[in-house]
Amino acid sequence: MIIEPRMRGFICTTSHPKGCEQNVKNQIDYINSKGIIEGAKKVLVIGASTGFGLASRITSAFGCNAATIGVFFEKEPSEGKTASPGWYNSAAFEDEAHKVGLYAKSINGDAFSKEIKKQTLELIKADLGQVDLVIYSLASPVRMNPETGILHRSTLKPIGDVFTNKTVDFHSGKVSEISIQPSSGDDIENTVAVMGGEDWMMWIEALKAENLLATGATTVAYSYIGPSLTEAVYRKGTIGRAKDHLEATAFAITDSLKAIDGKAYVSVNKALVTQASSAIPVIPLYISLLYKIMKEEGIHEGCIEQIQRLYQERLYTGNKVPVDEKGRIRVDDLEMRPDVQAKIAQLWAEAVTENLAELGDLEGYRKDFYNLFGFDVDGVDYKIEADEMVNIDSIAKV
Picture (cartoon, rainbow, N blue to C red):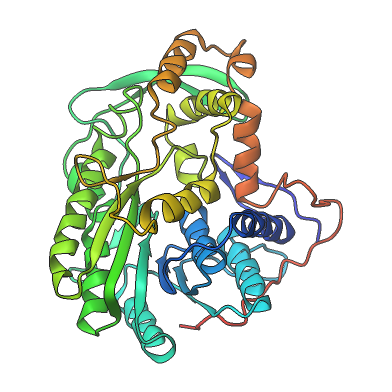
């Protein structure tokens, strides 16, 4: 079938298998160009099919020659209907890993559930024995607590006051003002339940209980801080409370792993185009300005460049892992450079619909967005029919 992007709001409802495959190959090529990292050898990636999770799996496998198990929740294809992009990403990753003799298996299901945790533990026990790195990179708007059965829904809201600022519709390029009402009721608690560290801790405790964590094992979760421009709706909003909880959980996990000399870290990464960030007001405008400046400075990074640097320059240097005053790994250092942020603040004040194409990198934003779904990828002929029925032969069926 000829596959084209179909938009519904901020989400693309189709994905292109060949575009996703090429995206994965491009990331693998980048990792191969950077040389071997003396790092983890048996890796579990929870949330392994897109964004930072996919980049972590690729970096682990092709950068460290590691065996990887990936857990994700993706829609399989059916006749005439494409799979979600993460399904095609994972299929392409496993194909490439198997070609070079790397172990790679996946589990598709709700990572918050007891069933998927149990299945993952059984797979590790049967095939790997133990893991020495656990990446936690889940991004979901909802979570059912497996202990209480309560379904929690996260919200993106400021706390205390209405938030008003600029945003942009990245499809039309229209800059407008938006106001977001503050949180109320159980908004904060629900957002913390979904996006905080509770499930991360559950995974580590489950692995520890079955003796599936190697001595000296490391676990890393991903977070974001961002600039003062976005802090009212992000870091000081409901999501920020969840990130605070996530970061506090890292210390609790490290304490729980003392017997095996294990460590837990939160890595603060840079702002990038993701399905989630595209739906957050203010963020698309901020990212379009950020991209323009970082590209001009020659310091722009995508997911794969960020994670490769995290592994090579932070986690596996042979020295103590560098952290900030709150114990966090910072690979958002280039984004948060004072000169970069000063330029963004200046451009932010000037940005309107008529000049955004000049001041920002809206085209770069759009391209990255469509790339998430396998569209607008260089080297892919979208006029040729593509087979939507891509299987992942090695996937562990539920």
